[in-house]
Structures are given as structure tokens and as C-alpha cells.
Image (cartoon, rainbow, N blue to C red; front, side, top):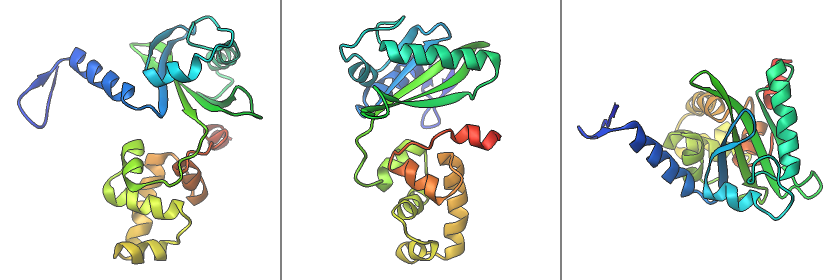
Length: 207
């Protein structure tokens, strides 16, 4: 069991799972599903169901469109043979329409491989607000303020002037932001903040 830091109340593993599901189901913008290595859906939140159950032919699991299921099969085969990356992205239904962006990432639970699948509408957010950046990437208030300014194209000096801090502090905070947002530079941070895809990021790092 895990003890809450706010009080002496003890949370069981079942409590934590329930809380996690509540949080996932409360976010209508992003769909999340956990799949077994044979492409069976073990859990999906409401948003994932709403986005993926679109009346098209189904794959092995009723949640997954046939085209997504086929792509997943290829991804899992590459993952098992260790010839491919541990994560990948596609547009659905295709790159021309790109109604959704679907991201998958391999993970291991109790020594058993699983797949985390995330779906999100390709309608971009108008502004990467400080509050949204905090919740999406687990940033502190200062990190989110710096990230928002940089994502909008401001220089370090401009961000520092607006926040009333020195430019060196902005640079230091930005390094932490890059790590938490899993990006390498200002351009990738802007893409991530505005929810644009960063293609083959992990693959490029490995090359």
C-alpha cells in the first residue's frame, strides 16, 4: 500500500487504479488505451472509444479500426525482433485527412510486454497556456511560464523581461523543460506545445 503525503490515509492499489481511471476518463481531449501484446484492449478511457469507434471495419479487438490494428501488428513484430523503435506515430485514417494522431509506446508490466496507445484530435490548440502545459508535462509554474514564452517564439531575453528574472535563469529552466517535454531544442518544444507531431524523434536520437 501507498501512504498519502497529505494525511495518514492509506491508499490501496485498487484505490490508485480507480483514481487513475477517473483522471483518464475526465480528459475528453486525449484517448488512452492499454493493450496486450496480442492487440487485445485491456483498458480504454471514454475519449479513446469515442475517437476510434467510427463505424469502419474492426480489427482483432472491437475498439481498433482494421487499419490501426494492422499497423499495430507491424509495430509489435518490429518491436519483438528489436529492429524497430519502442514508439511510433501515425495519422488516422491517413496522412491526407489526418483526423487523429495515434501514438503507441511499448512498456513492460510484471515482465510482460504491453502497448500504451494514445489518440488525439489533430485540431490544434490555439495557445499553449501555462496551466495546460503544467498539466500535460508535469511542469512547475516557472517551467510552464518559460515554455509558453519560448513556444510562442520569444527569445530568452524577452521571456526573462516579461517574467522579471535574469536571462541565465531562463536558460537553466529551459533545460529542465526540454527534459520533461522530451524535446531537444526550441523548435521541437514549440511543436510539442502546439501538439504538432515530431516524427521519429526517438529513432533520430538513436542514429
